[in-house]
Length: 113
Length: 114
Image 1 (cartoon, one colour):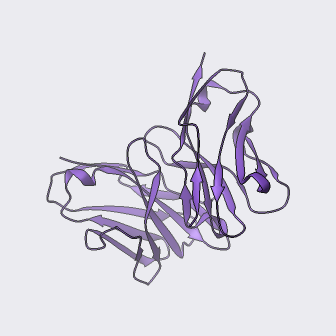
Image 2 (tube, chains in turn red, purple; image 1 turned 90 degrees about the vertical axis):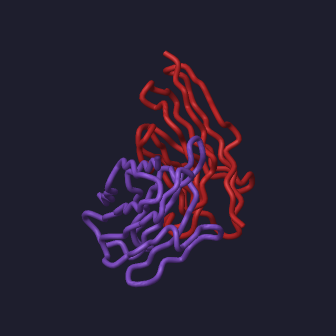
């Protein structure tokens, strides 16, 4: 069965500092991996996705993620966090094009001024 | 880009009544729509898969008679919460698309049953 683990429930960083959100997955086949961001009371916005090819993928809002098959990880990074990045972040794994995805429990990001 | 609209964005209903939530693909045809439920401070849980013109496929533990899903056209799927109770209060999100093109999430519907 597929599963996603986001080890950090809550992370606090200072504005301008770098950020890394961890994601580990378990999937029986080639995984399709996604990172989403959710602001309070809002739907999900896709930040980036990995299907194949270059293991370092670039997303919107300055985010990037690196797929490491040997570690079953897909960590999200941003070199300099902005206050507007404060939100809930979800990692997901799924079949073709994320139609049916399994989500991690999310990481809440707080940004200190 | 692909846009998925959910309506209403928020709804409050009395216990025992039914509520219908719509998921529309505005600028593309969605052969498949997925319905998720999100509890406070929790992740998304897939409830059911809806294919246009077919009966929905429900995940284990989801009551199909309570959560009625209809996908009558390539741009609209509806989720009806029947005889709603306070424990049905939640955030419901749909995802719409096609396998070869990808899927887009709607903005969600906050249901509160009082």
